[in-house]
Length: 311
Ligand code: BDR
Ligand code: CA
Image 1 (cartoon, rainbow, N blue to C red):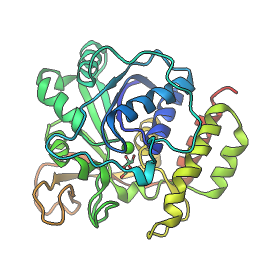
Image 2 (image 1 turned 90 degrees about the vertical axis):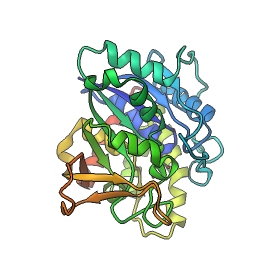
Image 3 (image 1 turned 180 degrees about the vertical axis):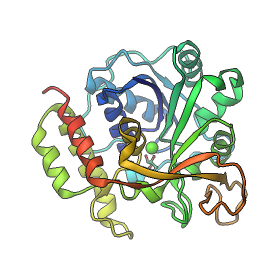
């Protein structure tokens, strides 16, 4: 099993990533750390705990991260994720205590004590991981890779060429991408294609266990944003689960080793991921960037994962 720590800001798609990570038979979810992003930090923490309570996985430690991006002001995404951060589903309140330390403490403890190198998955702004890497340089060698949902090559969802997680905390993203640790990046180019269509929603509605019910409710709420959007989506793109889906079965995705820089000083482009697809700069290829997905296999993987939960 791949030991992972999920650093997330649930968030509808983060919640589905978390559910996939618990369902995956080849993943050992050692801990969850929460970031400020889609909602205020107290809410994303509570949301991660509500999801784990729903899943009956209350022994997985959940720790709160930094309360805001490294240098910038926190801008939550209420339009997308609602006032709770997980609007639409009736979720149980957490029935287990928050981890006694911070996200940084939990990351350090788990990475240090893990027998095998740990994979860190980041589905929110990179704040916690930048802080962790800066504070615990001695543990870098124990990190196998950092899998990140963020950025875009020529596309954005908050600004013309900037994606939400990267725009929130570009300085942290820069620290993480330049850390020298292997980076696996899922930009919007692939995440936009990770859509669930009506036919998938119908299959999920038929499963009828408490996890599938919650996911359908969450998606019905989150999906409205895409009906009203300007970009023509056939289905509902669910970004964050790409990272877990890839860990479950990398053959669903295809990508390329590239050099990636993060713009932190742009006039119009702060937070943009500058992906050197054609190797124009000849700089070191510091990231494996995913561009394509076999959408049907991805959707099926989610449906199968939901089926694995009991009534
Ligand atoms: C990212 O931003 C958030 O709204 C989602 O949870 C995802 O991590 C997509 O841009
Ligand atoms: Ca997220």
